[in-house]
Length: 299
Image (cartoon, rainbow, N blue to C red; front, side, top):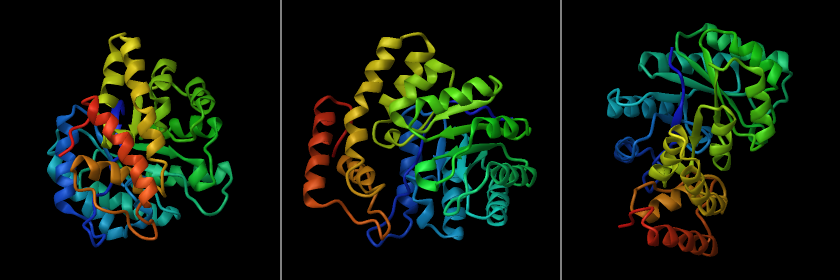
């Protein structure tokens, strides 16, 4: 069973200028990230605009990524939907594509009890042979997995880890204190990558790795060999980008940052609008500073 660890970019979904899925862009992003030394790829998450994609588009995007990666790194695919039934249907499709693991976000829109969340994940896990990573992002879903629920879920053989995007280190510490050390707790908030590793976490699913993959990877690699000062320097280098990608509506600024480097990320899908001229100017100012430090290669 796969053990999620290291730096796994939370991939954007490249679009063409008319907001259609760009196969060429996806294939380029896969290769760019793998060549940067990442430890896996995570697609169809929040920054991948899963909420704006059709069922068939999700399947096609995963197919392209698996095909292009060719087994070089594990492929983690977001399969979470509002209903248990639809999530199971998507999970089965992803299993047919030979993805390596699924990420399943908590259901959203309605407020669910912890028992309802437990049963949701249990039924999904029982429907597939694939390893599953729980995805906790309460600010977006309105539902948070509590530590006691995660402990129960971790006892299911193919639920192997979780991504916490609560933005709260205390939340991560509660999970780490409660679960077996073999259960992978991953940071989903990029400011908490090194703190999570230092506390016993296994890595991060990181949005900033789309733009600064080598910098984000160096946090993990330096931590792994005990070079904590170097790891902290790399962690600090993410701060300006993290602030910049909050400009506009997610993930417009993240895509614009990639467009700035010359990568064809394209626009976000409506109703997410492009950055305003002022927001774009602020983002470009940040990106120029990264370029001056040779942390990105712009064209």
